[in-house]
Length: 377
Image (cartoon, rainbow, N blue to C red):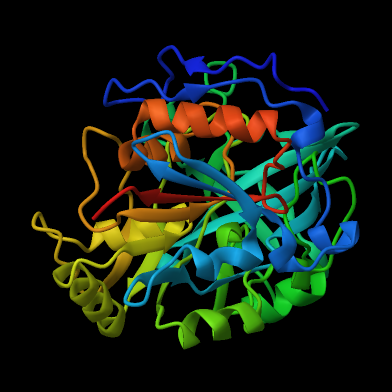
């Protein structure tokens, strides 16, 4: 596919952008949306493509993910998110007979949930904006969810003709322990670019320790046990943390909302040691960045901690601990791009994304990867 006519530019203001920062905007050709796992294309997980970009300069390298050990050095720390993916989608039906999907997003204190109601169309599911506060939606095996109020405070007190309510706070009632129930009755969340259902195993990383994510922390999907072994044998430190991801906001490009995280003491120690010895701290995924930066103080010292984070990384806020990032390719104008811009700068990010578009790299959770590294430390 020839995408060389694609123009990247700095976007105009978007609704979520409180800091006055305009993120990258571009047209993503449908042919560059990965619609199936690499295994279905005859590849191993670690044979997806990898774009290595050294910021802030122009150096861009093309390789495969299995070559990652060639680009990290002994003493560097890879911070990985060990959260596993849930079967977070459930079929439901409205009282008027409208078939819907319920997507579980974030488990809140008080046993409340952030949920999204979606409706199937010929092009996949889209947000369903006609749900009402107090509405009960039945779930399989006698379960149900009760929608209490819009998740965003600015949408409360409005009827649905005045506000497009995508996320709700709700009460979830199921007859058995949740993970067991979802294994039986749920299925992985997928969007229109994924054209068929895939088993939950395709949405897990090899280092998953605890399931709780609505959608896969996909930057780590390409790791294999053999590749992890090579990295460790080369003196690379692997530092685990946990952040349970919520649902994406592909249609609205909303800012990230609250997500549960846990950063253990051992990981804080590894990151602080790497920084003190001038080695790189490379986050695997924007979720790892968000968790680490939440527990970092103003001097960049990382402390153990857990809770809900609503941190949004923008150039105005800056980064305190992370100086490298392994990530997928992100949607135009998404808040993830503001994080990447904070790390690498607008001009470098624009150059890298133009190269990825020209080179036919694949987007989304089953797509290719981007390693951003500093030119020097």
